[in-house]
Image 1 (cartoon, rainbow, N blue to C red):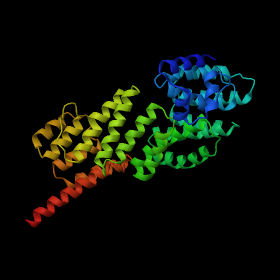
Image 2 (cartoon, rainbow, N blue to C red; image 1 turned 60 degrees about the horizontal axis):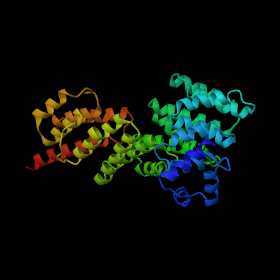
Image 3 (cartoon, one colour; image 1 turned 120 degrees about the horizontal axis):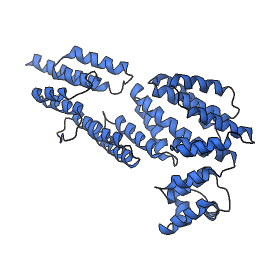
Image 4 (cartoon, rainbow, N blue to C red; image 1 turned 180 degrees about the vertical axis):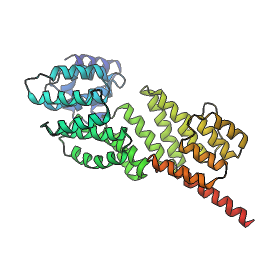
Length: 372
């Protein structure tokens, strides 16, 4: 097995002992010894834990090679899910080709499911195809996988309420599956999306943080899911705890950067963190800050001229955040209520709180003027 040589070489270079692997993965010493020696075909989750610990920045090449060698049922399912979750496009194609005409009909079923869910088609058509295939597959894992794909498609289509309703049932179905890498990944994927939708649509921060805790604690969560989860977690504290919000948003930015999502890393640094600081009326350097939050900053300062200049640089003036800032600038309470409605129509009840805070602020100003 080629992965054995690569694993032992990395352990030698990094001076990693078997006891270090045991202490950091929770696997039994005897099992780790057999994996390192190559005397068994390890379970997918076990090898993944070992390789990701020993080679944290190069584990995918080893797992790719192992995925094409697996023969056990749970490992075959896990290989398909690994290839999809970690965006190993070439590997997925090879797996589908390898198992499409396999002597074990169940393996053919796995290939047919992953061929469908990774095909290029519109969300509505794919949902319909998933439902049709759901009635034909025999394995419970593939039924749950198709159900999970449907949930994710609703989320991507901005039908978050349907996604949340499906996810409540879905998480229970996942919990009943046999322990495996496949199960752990599916739960991590579903919880990451569930937490995001739940926060913005319902604002249930306790449930959001509980779901995110699972993602961050899971040894199989991808770097992309971890980054997105820190992002959501930072948002969950944005109205209540400045320090925790800032800490998690910074984690999100660095995590996005590590996994190569530089667009999202920049979004956090130039939009989310400035938004947090503006909420708390802090002064900060506006270099590189997005136009919306420069507008927000000058509105907070009461600098009408600079606020209007910043507004000229805003591309989406129909954005509910921009509507809120302009309404505050113009001391226009009716327009604030329209901005609130705009948040609601977009299914973003959580960040609609910024309008509520602005209304409260305007009411205090009015009450102070009357008192005088």
